[in-house]
Length: 109
Length: 112
Image (cartoon, rainbow over all chains, first blue to last red):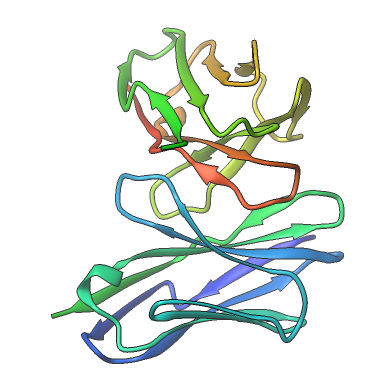
């Protein structure tokens, strides 16, 4: 059965303290992996798409990487406005989309 | 700005009283999705439309129905809401099946 697991469930960091969020997946065949940011009470906001192992994408303080079994979202020198839930979703070759439960990130000023 | 709009943003209904949630998009995307998201859980796909082609997830309750009268609009009908249907309902669009999705702000539904 296809599965997406995100860790940790929650993470508290001091402003400027870099870290990484993990998304591990088990799917029949990976067609793509997406990262989204979700603020409380709002819909998810698209961040990145990764298609193949070794691929990397960057946007401001965020960098997403992909291997054959997992993806990482690296956050460099985070600011309080980076506080949100970060969701990972995988797309398999049957066009099925599976979301993880997300990592709740809280950046303390 | 091109966007996905959901109405209402908040809806309170009584147990068993039908409710309709609406979604509209100005992105001219072919695919529209409805998700249910409960607190601290992953969004759960209910159904999606690829153009007019309707796709129902196997575990979507029969209580949930959807309509897409045209490219821009999509509706979620809950015929007899139960307490367990209290959740955030998210509408999303994508240009084609499998491309990145753009979400609306959601409708928070409370069933009393």
